[in-house]
Image 1 (cartoon, rainbow, N blue to C red):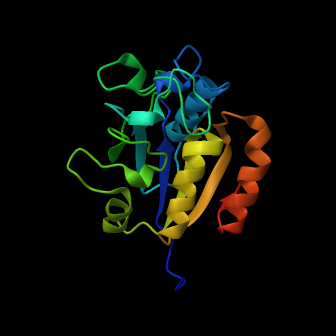
Image 2: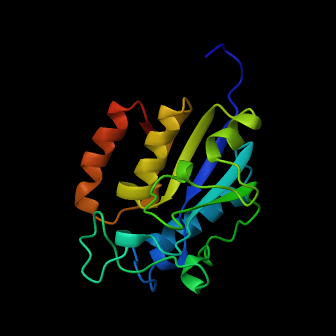
Length: 189
């Protein structure tokens, strides 16, 4: 860093109906995460840019399975044209600079695999806006939040995961996830 002020973005990962209670791939605490993110963003916040990511599946192949292992294969979720693909109702903040959709025809965990409606990738979008630091929150701690944070750090952004604003598929894997994030230089608070 050159000592210049940090330009920070918030990446809201996959806070969608299907990933919250009542959805086809519900994560315990998902709705509370949606509400917590909304609370963060209704007050004066430190973010120059706020973006969201969404699973946006058309036909992701083996990512969907009738007998999922909940690691690499999953029940059907976040299918384009269904209510489950939409951002959760408790996420009342909707003034995103862009929403990055991912996973139409293949598994995609990181928001950095997604594209905005005009075809921009997340890293380029953030760099064009002078962002050099990102906070990551959303669903799920041990999958898409993890992948997005790792890719953010690999792309050169100072990266922090807001752990209290995440929910995990497998809470027993969070400690391993946090170790992996730390090893990659990702801060957790």
